[in-house]
Image 1 (cartoon, rainbow, N blue to C red):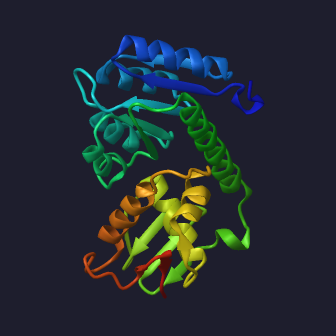
Image 2 (cartoon, rainbow, N blue to C red):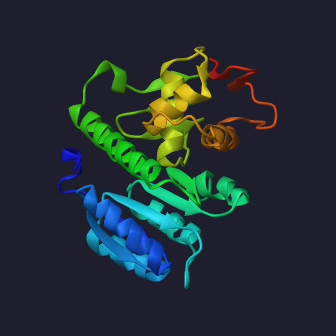
Amino acid sequence: MDDSARGKAILVVEDDANLLDVLRYNMAREGYRVVTAQDGEEALAVARAEKPDLLILDIMLPRLSGLDVCRILRKEMSVPILMLTAKADEIDKVVGLEVGADDYVTKPFSLRELVARVRAMLRRADMLRDGAGSGGEEGLRPVQVGNLSVDSERHVVLLDGAEVSLSPKEFDLLALLVQNRRRVFSRDYLLDKVWGYEYAGDTRTVDVHVRWLRQKIESDPGHPTRLLTVRGVGYKLEE
């Protein structure tokens, strides 16, 4: 059992009863307190009542889709959300602008990988919470890059003085790039630092978040001048 799991509650939302049982058993074995739901409306009710530390949320749900559940909860709470999807073409929706999930896994998936993702997401959430409570540190002061301001302490991004709505992982990614302007980061490095785990698989998560960030901070997202791709290497943020 992972000692860091003590006291942590996970809401698992899955309409397949067999898979739900498997996920419930494995999360409980890791030491988490597990609550469950089998459709979208039930998921909203349980999330609001239980205030879980993390959601494992299937996309395909009765009554209300996982995408809708994620969209609604993202406006109400900052809980980390890990989505389960069986379709590769849904990945953009999962990690994109309108939904704002923190991560995803595609079915079929390894339980070992899923557990590793959950641990990493919870550790990351704890680190952000601890950092926000420290206050007054130099690194938490707002950073201004042209008409873009990133305030890591208040978790606020302003563009030309107007607040920009970002998902938690979009914010984390932008904050890292802003604090290290002109430095080039590989996708693997960003995946490790922002998502909190070493994963030698698909780095599309990073690419999708970069694309959605460009939609929000670039005047012409198709021809970015701020958040740049360094071919064969990764990404960097220019002044």
